[in-house]
Amino acid sequence: MPNVNNADGSTPPDGPNIPDPPSDISPRQAYLLDMMEMDHCLSNMALAHEIVVNRDFCFKESSPPNDSLEGRVKEIIHRAFWDSLQAQLSLSPPDYTNAIALLQEVKEILLSLLLPVHTRLRAQLEEVLDLVLIRQQAEHGTLALNQLSNYIVSTMASLCAPIRDPEIHKLRGVSDPVDLLREIMQVLNLMKMDMVNFTVQNLRPHLIHQAVQYERTKFEELLNRQPASLDNTTAWLQGAVSEAVLADSSCESLEQGESISMRGSLRTHGPISPSAMLNQAYVRLLRWDPDNQLYPESVLMDRARLEALAQKLHLLVLEASALLVTSLHYGGAVFLVPGFVGNLKQTITALLQGSHQRDFDQQGALLALGEQLQKQVGEALSAQGRVVPSPEVDSLLKGQIEGLAQDHDPVRTLIGARAQSYLLAVLGASDARTDPAVPSSLTMVAPELAELGQAFKRIVNFNHMVFGPYYASILRNQLFPNRRA
Image 1 (cartoon, one colour):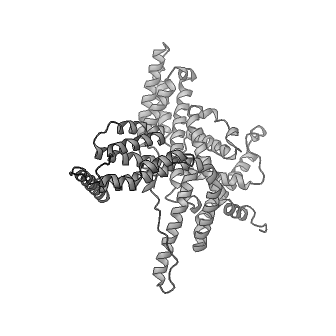
Image 2 (cartoon, helix red, strand yellow; image 1 turned 180 degrees about the vertical axis):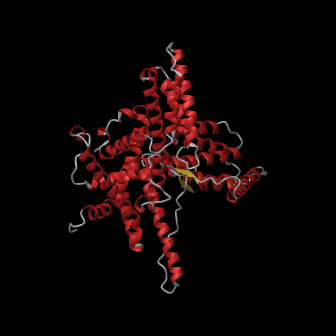
Image 3 (cartoon, helix red, strand yellow; image 1 turned 90 degrees about the vertical axis):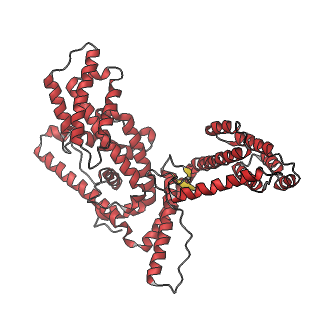
């Protein structure tokens, strides 16, 4: 049975088809049945969502751990079957009972892999793997199992994806009939998954509209059962509105105290756009505090993806901050040394990996990073025959790199704000061809940031298509409380 390869490694259950509860059951039993039906609904909704949002989505054949009870039972059953097949074929005359059952399963799988255009191959398969004829041949001792196996391998070679060519080549070198049939079944199972995933990839563009309607309908069913299912979503959008109003007030106060020349750098005040407010709310999820904030229900299925993007963004901000500080201290010329930036980025990534975790020694890692950056800069300058920086400059660099551990470090705050502004601009762009340029201070992490922005935009766009009507209602009440619906 296939399982789903989710971003967080989890497998949504298929869930049973739960009938309406009988009228004479107890309230507790009715509640449990209701929860089971909701779980089934959520599972189906999560699967549809995953197929559309996750471009790397794929099915994989179920493979329980070898040391688990399920894994041991599966291994025992499989070994018993193949041992039985080996024993049957070793008899004189051979007993083909299990072999014929296996050939029937192989035939069904091969037929399932055929496309409508494969009319001639379908007819050939029906003729060569005619189970009635095969049973008659077995009864009369004329069944050529090796010839059938070789035909099956040749047919598989004509149907498989190029990625399976090595497995097919390996099959051609297996001579023992039992080993060959066992390997054939393993490769056929892989080919089944390949076909399913090929179909999913090709249908994805056509699934988006249906998935939006399906997911919205399922969420409405949940909302009807539990009206409080939008409470956290409402609080999330209320927080975004409050944050925007506070920022607007702070900006206005600053304008009143600054010179006219400074006012040009501040944003123009005006009505708050619900669309821009919603984008701000999404970006806010990338700095979510799970200990003090309840995650919005409407984004729960993307939580693992958004948390992974938040971790990546945190690392990119630290990387860009460290690179900017290094560039300011040693000048841009050292960054022109071939391979220097790539080596520097690898060092930063290696030392700061896991910096989003609460138990990560960020200050210690940044202290080590400062030492390593100073060393790499000195080596690069020496190799170019240039003057090595003074100890005072090196010491100042290490101090500023170590200072990045503070949440309110000015460089880190600036880089973080520009990264968030870039993501807001990406969300506001009409399509990929009009995506904004990465800010100059983030140029050295531009490819990574652009990739993050596109992944973020895919999640936001689909979520907005599904839950847009709910968001519009909540934001309308928050932004225009005196306006009639």
